[in-house]
Image (cartoon, rainbow, N blue to C red; front, side):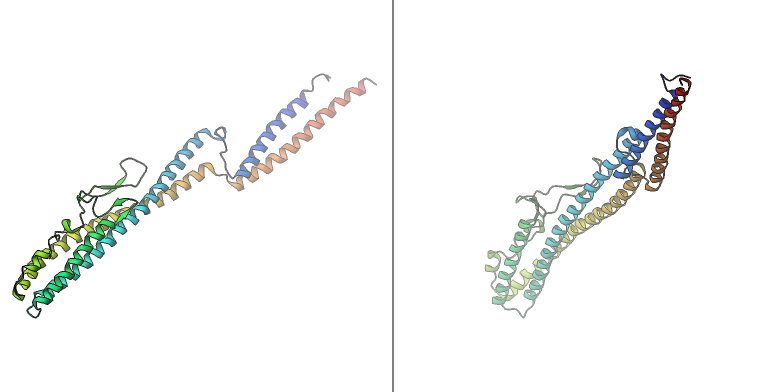
Length: 286
């Protein structure tokens, strides 16, 4: 029998050290709720989970972009809806002026009213903006630019509102409708009626143009909202996939903790017994 090196005690100590290390890892997982707390826990799993998390974060930002895009498009649509209402009123007044029962003075009064309404079309186009972006006219010169919304994590994941919305007097073709020279040239109710009838065609064309722009805005909004719904579903599924890799299963880990705890207690007992065995040597020395 040898007492200088207690091999049994060292073996039990090594096993108990490893068990306590595993027990500590189990406690870390239970306290954080994560199966992977550092790269050494699962290197490949961490790489996959981080990539999934980055993808989900990008999609969440794209959803925010989409909600902002919807707000922008709704502002543009509501503004053009008001312009459409103005043109509807103008059309009614032109029809009123076109009939023989309207006097020359009445026609000139209607012309002044129409002139004010036409001015309001430009007021709306000038003030309809979102975060500094002119929505109905890119500039006073009427140069509209394509508006692109980033709706995904790749550079090509964009939705565009095509260029070409010039919803002002010039773009709608009503800038010369009832200026002061037109009304001053009327010499009889008949001349005023003929003028009103000629302008009816202009207003009808303007309404057609405006409705086309509103259709473009509406279809773009539908496209954006569809993309938002799709990305929200994708985020949910990606988060679920990440959870499977990263999150701890509390039921399984609790069972593992209890097992390691029992093994640790047994290991401590084994160390004490290994040390007690050495006491038998003392009997040989008596």
